[in-house]
Image 1 (spheres, rainbow, N blue to C red):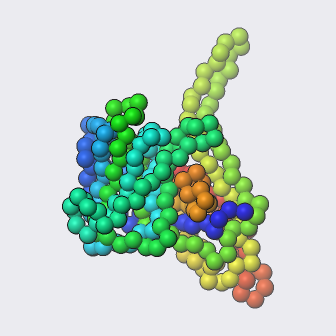
Image 2: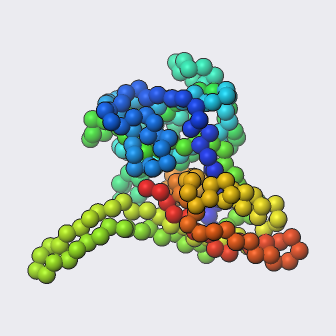
Length: 260
């Protein structure tokens, strides 16, 4: 059974302003806010780079951070910082984020972090120092930060996690063949059993907010594996409420598809 799942409906830093320490031509800072995670922002260096944000309307609270489609090496130093002013010489919040790897030691190109309480600042910054990176630059496809929602009753046992490879291969007799390689992505299927009306209404409200078109962060194991099992995802099924007894409901089949 996973940890109590969490989902973050929107990135509260998107409406604000921001900038990066450096930018390669044609790959602007705005790409870290773009819903298409394959559109990256690329720096011109790697030794000490940052992406900074000024929240719209002043201090803004967050307790979940997602860094998607990054090119950091496993030895990179990654810091998430918050401050009351734009001067980050001594940031009020300075959190180290870990670059994670799979069981073969390959870097997983995403980082998730959950705070135990809401952190509220007007200015935010991601800092990366990665001198050992084989590339001369760094790239990020999406920076997503906001406040999570955690259901009172967790998803039921029996959920499925499918890794899909949409690549196409053409076989030619007596030849090696040809492959059109595409990025792999994850699909999650799960349900809730016997949840109260308030939780059912909460999930429906989230679905009404994002529909089948807007991406959100989903943490399957936010406490034990926040990076490994975090996906930037969207609904691929409608949400169904099944009334069980009195004001108890089940939501039998929900499928989320990762955006990559």
